[in-house]
Amino acid sequence: MTGRVVFVCTGNICRSPTAEGVLRHLAAERGLADRIEVASAGLEDWHAGAPPDARSQAHAQCRGYDLAAQRARHFTRSDFARFDWVIAMDAGHFERLRRLCPPHAARKLRHAADFSDRVPAGGVPDPYYGDGHGFEQVLDIVEAVCAGVLEQVQALHDEPSGRRE
View: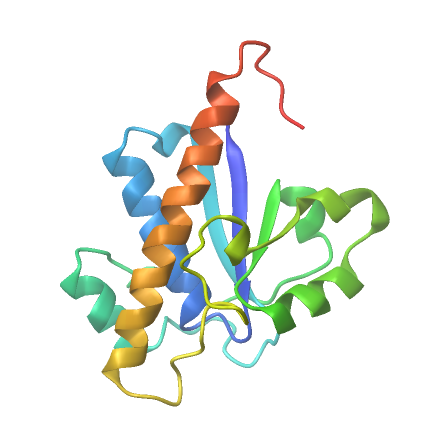
């Protein structure tokens, strides 16, 4: 069984690719890489094809996460069919995704805060216009969110019936 997860932020160069890289790394570390497919996307296509922001990469690398191979892509409505969980990084992303979401896929739409109480009220803050502290804060929050995602993937895998909702 796998869980197919896509993290979504604005341009797919800071928050969501960081979450993708962290979740891939943690899943591999915990022996769960075969149970989860991870991606990220942006609600805007401004950066499609571009690597994650250099600051995101540098801060992630300091913690052992490699984001270098990732490339930004635009989130499309068809992603609701492809993924089991569409995880919005903040409240604004959640609202935009809710409007895009087909009614039959509404159960797939999640907020990062659904996976950790370390997520601030508005969601994972955007570090783009700030300094290094913002990128470190995003990493702290994203690590907690990804740990929560992995707990839920593990719980689904451990269900006796092997079925997921």
